[in-house]
Every structure is written in structure tokens, then in C-alpha cells.
Length: 201
Image (cartoon, rainbow, N blue to C red; front, side, top):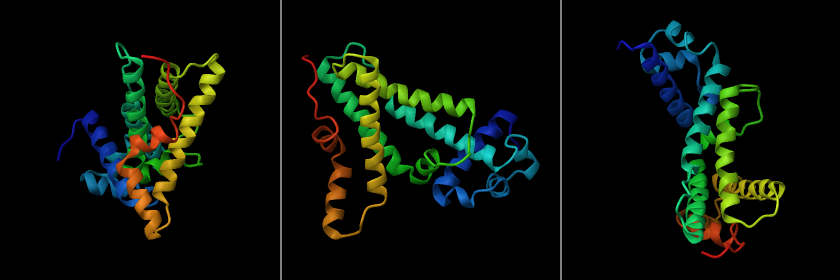
């Protein structure tokens, strides 16, 4: 198949994202990607100079997609509606982690992939800023520092929940509880992470 240059890069990234999620980042290579898309190795190297460059693009895409599920337009919402949307966004965060386990692990891995990459940093900040916006909208906090601390608390909670649900024990009783949490994410988050009452509607 013949690709336009920009379309080829998009196809390479989408395919790499899928392969990374299916097989893990360790098994992904530029040669594997070229074979999967049906182009030459040279064509891939025109867009990604090495595997680190490719993984950086995948991480950036992951944070872009995560930011999309966290984005909420609070304009015109009552306090109750705003909190409902914020809790839903938090549930979407957990769902994203569960549905993109390999990508999520790569996004938060302690490695030099994407180190000092501006596009990756921008997407990370974009995703976290949606969380900060939600906290500022839904909690009566006295200072930017308190808002930031609350944002980190909620982020740690949902991030930790993803990690636990992805690596839980297989004991039947625990599995039953895990299944309940996954099927009732918003209820679970309201009862645990979002236990602070909001201001009046």
C-alpha cells in the first residue's frame, strides 16, 4: 500500500500503539512495525530514528488519549453536576488504565524513554491540568498549594487503584470484590476518594 508521508506516520503510530498494547513494549521494534504496516524499514526510520523515539511517541499518544478522557467542560454546570462529571472523569481514568494496561505501564515507567521530550511533557501537563481544574471546581480550598496537594491525593488514589486492579490476587473472594469495583467505579470512588462534601448547588 502507498501512503502519503503524514498518513504513513499516523498509521505507524496507531499500529505501534496497538502492537505495544497487545505484545508489550519489549517485543516492539521498528522492523516488526514495518512488517506489520507493510512498508520498508527505511520508511519507518524516516519518522522514528530508533526504538526510543517510537516509544516516546507511543507514550505521548497515551497521555493525549488519557487527557481526552479526563477533559470536562464545567461551564453552566451546578455544583452537583460538576462533581458528578469529575467523578466520572476519575472513573474514566481507571477504565483507561484497565483497557490499556501495557500502554499505561509504559506511560508511567521509570525509564529514559521520552526524557526531556517537550511534546510528551506537554501532554502529561495537559492531563494533570484537567485534574487540577476539576479539584478547583469541586472543592473549597484556600490556596493553590492546597489545590495541588488535593490533586496529587486524587491522582495517587486512582493511579494506585489501576495498579491494584491490574495486579490483584486471584483469590475468589478478592476477585469478587475486584469485579464489583470495576463494575461500580463511580460508586467506589464516591465512597472512597471523593468523601469530602462539595459546596452547595
